[in-house]
Image (cartoon, rainbow, N blue to C red; front, top):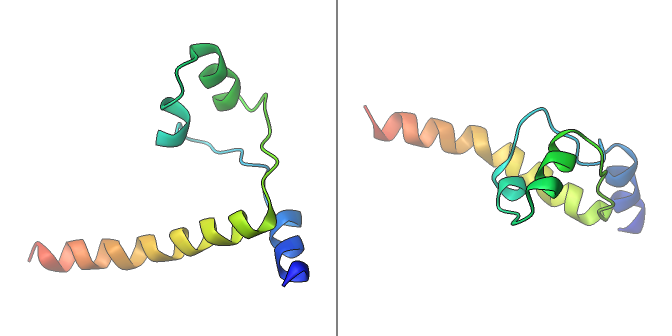
Length: 72
C-alpha cells in the first residue's frame, strides 16, 4: 500500500491548479489566497490523498452523465 501511495505522491503536481478552487477561496486570509493561486505555496500532501483526489476526478465524468440524463 505504501508503494501505491508513494507512486501517487511522486506523480502529483504539488497541488498547483490552473483554476481558483473552492477549497482555496474559503480561506479567510486574502494574502494566502493570492499566494496559493499564484503557486507560491506548494502543498505537501500524502500520496493517499492524491489517490482520493483521483477517485473524485474519475467520479466527475460519471456525475456529468447522470445530471445530463436527468435533464432529458
